[in-house]
Every structure is written in C-alpha cells, then in structure tokens.
Length: 565
Image 1 (cartoon, rainbow, N blue to C red):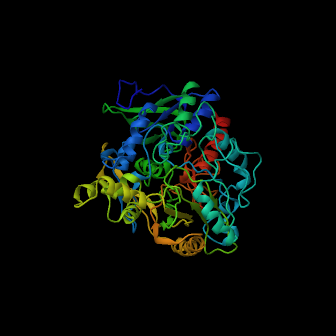
Image 2 (cartoon, rainbow, N blue to C red; image 1 turned 45 degrees about the vertical axis):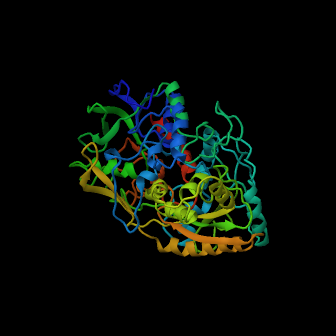
Image 3 (cartoon, rainbow, N blue to C red; image 1 turned 90 degrees about the vertical axis):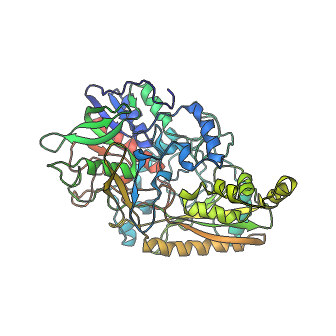
C-alpha cells in the first residue's frame, strides 16, 4: 500500500473485541498480543501507512537543506495544528510522527529501564508522588519488551536496576570519540558504560543488522532500528485490522456514562464512521489522548471523558536536555554514525532530593555536517546551536546559503571543510523534571484543525527543580571537558527546555480516583472498558527515554485486558 490515499476500505468492522486508537509502540504491541490470543482487534490510526520502500527517499529529505524536518514524515498543516501558550514554546510537530509506527519512525532508539527510585519519588525524597506499581511489577515486562523490540546491550552498568537475563543481542562497540571521554571520566572517577539500543547489532527477527546509514534520527532506511510498524504487520498477520488515515474525533458512551460504546472517526473521503467494540484502548500519546478525552465531553462527563478527578491533561512533563558542544585541537571523528554508544548513570540516583537525577550522554553527531559547513560558512557552530534551541529554524541553513555573499568555492571551500569537520565534540545530559499542575494540555477552542475540532494547547513552563539539576549537570560536564587530553578551541552551553519528545504525565496512574485518571492496570477509573496505554500514565518521568517503559506497560495491560475478554 503506497503513501498516497489509495482506494482502501476504511468503513468500520462489526462490533469487535477491542478497538485501539493509535498505531505507535503501545498500540502495535497490544494489537499483536491480543490478536495472537484470538481476539478481534481493530486499530484506528490518524496518520498514513508509509511504504517501507519510501525510507530512502525520506532519508534524502532529512539530509538535504531544502527540506525541513517536518517534511520527512509529512507532518504539519491543518491536521496537525497546535498552540503553545506556556513560558516555553513547545514545538509539538517536531516531537511526534502521525502514521503507522508512530514516533518510533523517527526516534533515537535508546531503551533504558526506569530505575527503582523513579517509582518511589515521594517515599525516597518527599517529592511528587509514588507510582502505584514498582520496578518489580514491571521487571518481567521489561524483559519481554527487550525481546519484542530487539535490544542490543551488555550488562555493564553498575547503576542499572536488576536484570533477570541477558540482552537479546550483543552491544554495539564504543566509538573512537568515546575513548577520549572515557579517559577524562577515569580521571574523575566517573563510571561509563554501554547504551542499550533498540537496533540490531546482528540480524534479528527478519530484520537486518545495522548497516550504518547514520540517519537514525529521523529515519532508518534499513529497518535495523525498531519501529512499531513491525508489530503492526505481525498483528495484521494474526487477523487484526489496521485502518490508516482514520482520525478519531470523539468517544461515545452508553446512557449510564460508564461504558464506551464507539469511537467516531473521519476518513480522507470526508465520511464519518463509528467503530463499536467491547473494550477500547487509547494509545495515541501524551498529547492526543488527553485531547480526545476532553473532546469527548457529554452531559454525563461535562469536563471531558474519564475526568472526574479534573486531572486529564494536567501534570505534563518533558525532559529538558543540556549540551556542552565545541571544538578540540584534535579529531573526534563524530558525525559518522547515528547512535550513541556510551553513557553514565552515576548521577541518576542521588542521596538527597536535590539536585535531581540526570544521565550523561556522549554524543556522536557533534558539529555541522560537510553540507552545513559549505552552506553556512560564517558561524557554523552557532548555526547548529540555534537549530538545537529552536527546531522551527531548521530550514535556516538553506536560507543562509541563498543570502551569503563572498562564499568560498572549489579548493578553498574543500580546505575550509577539512579544517573544521571532524574535531567537534558534544556531551549532553537528560534532566529530571517534576510533575506540576500548571504544565498541562488543554483545548484551544479559538482554533480548529482540519476536521473542525479544537486544537491542543500545550502549556510548558520551567521547573525550579530541573533548573537546579541543570546547574549541577553542567558542573559535571565542564569537569569532563576540562580533563580531556586536548586543547579546547571553543565551547558553548545550550539548554533545550523543550526536550526531545519525551512528553508524559497527562493521564496519570493512581489508586485514588480523586487525583488520577487510570488505575494500576491502566483502566480508567470512570469507565469500565476504557484503557489508556501511553507515557501519559507516568506519575513521574525520571530522566530516561520512555519507550521501553511504554512497551512494558503495554504488554502488562495486554495481559490484563486479555483476561477480561
């Protein structure tokens, strides 16, 4: 099936066992497990079904300056309109992909487990709230998730939570630039270790080993990096029906207001349909799930569906990233591969509440590419930093190329590129934030999307806890750079408050219906047949990438839901 809207039957099925909204990792894994168990499953996905063969073309878009990042996976336009009303502009469309596979189509592929302390923030530090489940509850599902996604790693991280079995594949070897930073860390008694990756270091489950395109973000042309369309195809082979370009507009419920009866969706031909089911699962991410619940208001649920607690959309979290980036007087050979191979979690579980958790990542994509050096010949590093701080300015490279005068050509240009390329470095840290009620997703009723529905509004504001953690993290990063066996030519700090798309917390999990949206099994407190499976149920976010935890929660919820069918 091609990217174009071919003649496809998008009419609803007769009443099925489970209707899942969203075909990202959570929805795909649940569809696969439920369909394999013999249940009738329909998945409704707002975005397209992308041809695998189109990935090479999309990779070319990602590296050509004439294209914006949004062009790679066809994001933007009235369908994807949003507003950002908080202190920090949140570039939502740069953080997500709508389509079969969801945001795993453009993600980085790092898959660490959340350590025990992330489930126990109130008990340990008197901060935020504890999760109603703990690490032990998720541990077997983490192991299953690693097998399902295909994770390459090695058990060399002394700060990681306990494991019960080895990783499915061997870890990727450390890069050349890692060796430079490893020596500096040894001087400071900072322990480094490998990075678990949801990409194949060897052929795995009919997917090839990584072949080194180096464009992992935003597209892997070989399919070695996991994306959720893998499990969509498996679910379809087991009998599930997956309907693309089926944008769900609202959920309907029975007269009692306690049971969802249908998901109402629109198709490209302008038709409106109702998919009925015994059970419903929302797996559309931390923004679209609260938005859909709020759009489903009714006389029985005047503040939105599943919102008797008033917390739907509240406690939005996104992990800030900080970067220390610059040039050395020696080659680092970065910008050659697209995955990071070394981290340090030494500062992740502090003894005191503050400063909070952060994890250190040693970059492999520092500095401008040769194309960017050629196009932006004045201040290439500053140009890169501007793009990192404001993703909406990513197209500025080509604009600068058109506006520059007196640019170099031929041998002079080649000499300039050789002088500047390959000696950049980057060290980053992901920063813990705390859930705060003023950070939220609401409806902007002044603006409507392509279907005439109010668009989401993201209010994202600085977190004082994170600000203090950022200062401590920069101290550590600076000390590492100061201990490099090289002279530093230039060095810049950058704080990305808008993060890299790790949003969570907007339909939090809990045992008290008065202050949470779903119970520990991820079923909503207010409706007996509605489950929310997403990072939206996170109580706290930690400072790890969330996808493995999303996958583990989905597998756990699938087991629970199957027992109810």
